[in-house]
Length: 504
Image 1 (cartoon, rainbow, N blue to C red):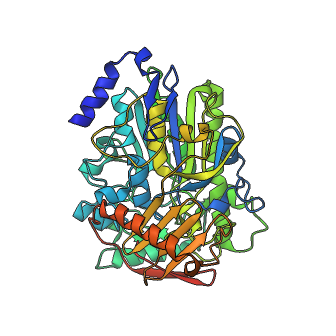
Image 2: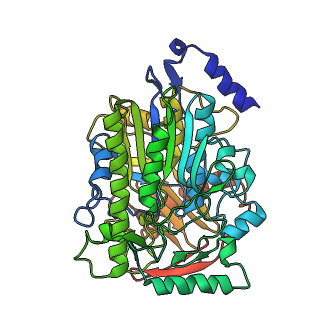
Image 3: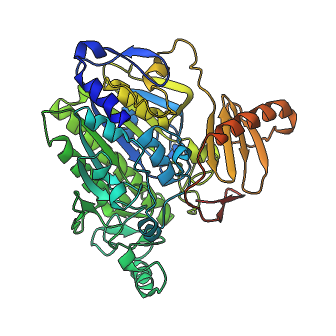
């Protein structure tokens, strides 16, 4: 109850008394006189080089680029895990997910439902903090933090939910007239039938995932509201429908500020687009790569639609927009992914797995065209938004993020402590320009990512003292973390001539 007493106490303080708040960075700054609206847009498996701000010439993403052009582009924006659900757990709480045992993905969906795997109900979400302060809160899109009632979005701080609970679902009915699948519809039908015929988990009725398509069942279908009302998508395209739902939520009430968490599932599998987007890339010969390009383009269009709506309604000037991806691109799908100018992708602790597109726009508070080159974290989103709303952080637990506004305002390079990652037994650590890793086989590496962003030159032998210091710091961090509450699955894939082994 202490956490809520703190928040309720803050609500009773007059506006004049909360002009300045302290954030996790121990740096004070003024907050807006009127609480800002907040939109956090999370892409799914979007690579660093999939956004034209970060890599020119691959795809054109003018609407995503606009967020950075009118705000700040973070060149070294990191997430807390190279895979979906642990990354989202940290984003929602502002804490290392290892503090509460959320180290591995909580799937497949039947296991999630059967074993009650998800975000610990004792954890405080950003939605809970903001709702207690009078915000309307909405989640549109992918949750992936648990399917049972104790994890359900409307029980975790969200007034409104329209989306799906698990790791993926279809973007469009595979046999819809306008659907373009990476594989022919007959392959989709065959995959669905194989799942339906399965005697082990994988049946359509359980909502299990069948690659490369999501076979829609009761666990990964689109639903809405606290009663889990099924949504009939018809032949609609989910990326577009999520944008429409987001706009509907924005317009749903004028008497309160709003917090919208728009968790788009593009460009995660299944690889599906529509003719409109597929036709934009006639020069891409590989069908899967062309579908993927269409998915990125549809994602960009959906963001443009929301930005235009904010302009048209006059809301843009008092709305914070944060954009980032949950992890790097899915390098294990052949011929679609380019982590340039980095190396690796999803499921790896290479830069391409944990460094993501990351931007923030707040008119009147962030100078347009700001380019920030120091490391920041997805865990920073929580304290940034809490401070922007003029609120204190919950005081009954440590938070692992730092106010991004304080980092931008720092006259000297922000003295950020090291970043740590873990997917047992895989370990990684970033201390300024130096990155240490230990892989599944126990091999250790040290890279200077400032000079070697592709992590080609392992300099561990020439830096024994530095590595010893980093190991000590890592062990101290790990000793304060919780053991995983469930296990992952060993798998491996080959990308760019290197074999990656992992436990997702």
